[in-house]
Image (cartoon, rainbow, N blue to C red; front, side, top):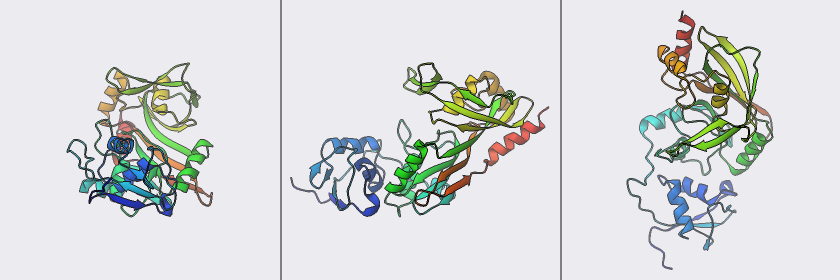
Length: 315
């Protein structure tokens, strides 16, 4: 097979050892959607040491990866990072270690592109941080949630941090404003959760006895006339867990367009709240190399602080 002039052969370096082929390509080729990556791998246009591989193939030191020339239509192309987003992300790094970093994720930015989202946080960061050969999410936050988001800058760090997550050695604390007065005696919500799809393909979560075990700890931080500020600590890590558990307890999060209530909508409007009031305020995890505990906090965004000020003044 003759190679075109734009075909690249890239050697795998130490920092890329163990990385999946699809993630390797996402880092190397800017502006390419994941669906296209899967397609060119499936068609055999991507080769490792001249052999066909699957998207989940793990790379070894010295492997030679063939990257074909790609011409993207405007519909396929991942949007380039705007100057505003570039500056926002550059100023959102809370702490950066040798092989990890924690971002104060802005609300409204999805962590991944796809499903109509042209660019997500991880794709944008890979464009902004061209100095990094490896950058992967350790965990996720909902699009409308702000706060601490942990990323790994090397394969060994990702594996170590994922293991810490599985062994429950990573603690996350969120701040949420919920409708009504949360009873101080109710400190845990344990309700099984099941994912399902609406008719339009949108994914939701509901309480269901046949679902997966889920448990969240809630602590009252401040009580207002018609709302409560709570700290929420998910013991398990299910999709939309805090939001669904709070709604199940009869106190949905304010600004929640999926699991909120009419009363909550009116209250949010009266407080000038235009987003989900859910913020990943603190993150604690073992440093992947030394094992020492790392504790990081993300300050509450000014827009949410303003909402609390209004709640305190409400009659």
